[in-house]
Length: 285
Image (cartoon, rainbow, N blue to C red; front, top):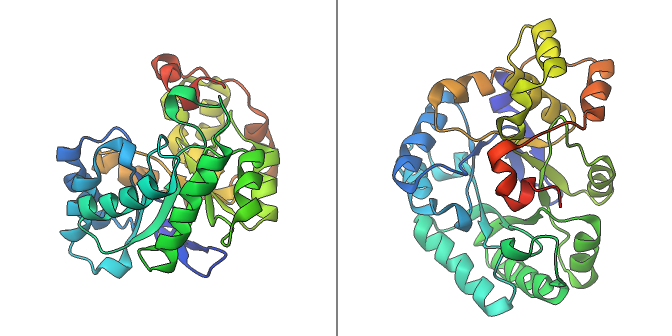
């Protein structure tokens, strides 16, 4: 499971492990156990958010993991609804307090729009104000790297207009069946590392016959193939699970997908998120 020891280097020199544990949908009272299990298996990158409602549990897991704090990379996200400077500053401190940590390694603006208006109105000024707060917290040493999530190119360009720090990261929905090539290329051109959330398409990809056949060819599971795909795209992969067996198998991705098969996965466009289509990020907006 060498992938657990591999890192990317952000544009400011901070190292980030290539494979992380996503904690969306993990209840606060189960989050500490999930984090401790992940750390025992070898995970060093833990991703949470204010919106997940589990920062307290994640922080407890980090603090009681048995590892020195500097050996873990902890990310959280500013609630998508916060689009002004002062509330953003207060929320950053609120996250640190909930996590029980004196700093986080990465903090992102969770979305360019509030969730109830995802891909809707104009929040350009609010995003710049929230970004200014992240820059201040970054300068103060509360956050080692700062970034965004679900930002399209025009959202990034808006931030860059007045920024003193180019976002280090853009966390996006990236998986076989949803590969935003142009946005990935744009981020690469600005040295913005992309993190792939829901690399297994929130489970939707498991039923795809073409992907099943390809996984069989490599002697791996569909989730392993999908995680490997996002890693070979050059992204951080953030599969989410509270199940230690899944954590273990998600990290067993030391194989190479051929260029031909990468192209086939990149060209996939068929994903039905089922019940999860209700979530803004899966609704096809």
